[in-house]
Length: 306
Image 1 (cartoon, rainbow, N blue to C red):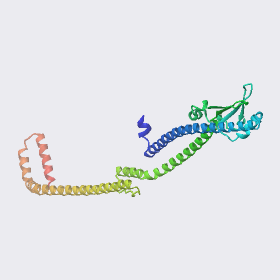
Image 2 (cartoon, rainbow, N blue to C red):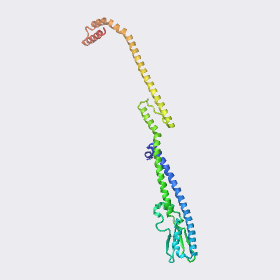
Image 3 (cartoon, helix red, strand yellow):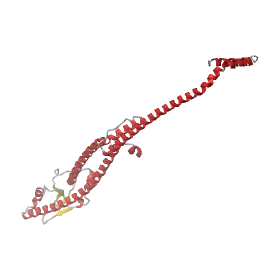
Image 4 (cartoon, helix red, strand yellow):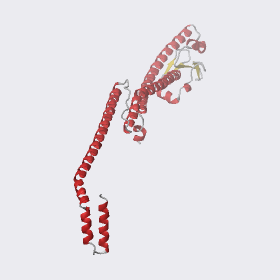
């Protein structure tokens, strides 16, 4: 399985997969660190907003009490605290009913804009219990609750923007690396085709030296090998032709020696032919027909030597 998924892939594909995996691991680690930092920043921001809101509400209520205008508290608080963020301020009436004073409905980013999994990761654990109550004499209490929804929504927008930028840059990097690795590893393809040419017996094949130093050394060694193989083939051809020439020379010498040794014998046979013929005719006159046939064949053969 591993052989098919990894080792059978081209070198360029393996490098791109390795680089992409490293970038992905780095992005995951950066995301974990970013979530931890965002959670910490959100908690600090909520605590600071609660402190500021408590001071504003306390100051506003004291000012209205000094002016004997506590009955206008519900109208004055939204005007004084409309720029505060990360808090929800509620006014408790004499019946114990809670009315949201700030922020006004529709003026805050809803938490649904951020995915639930992201909100669960970023939301501080203690923010839900961060409640402040401000109360003075002759006035209904004001309840201040930390609200991290808008902070989480902002963190999600930043996180998603960074994710889009990272994906775009990573895709561009992989495309650039694909092209660069193609140019860098192209000499290996030429080297492979050169080895195939050597295997087919084309020892005159030579490769141009690439600009990459390491691949240049390999190409130079290939050219040296091709030159050595060509020289060896030429030397073998020369030795083969020399061997054939020596064999032909020895064949001619053997033929001459055989001719020189057999010549006198043939001449003697030719010279003694009439005498042998007479002797055979005389000795075989009374012989059987089979013997006479053999004598006749010998005489014909002897006649061919004349």
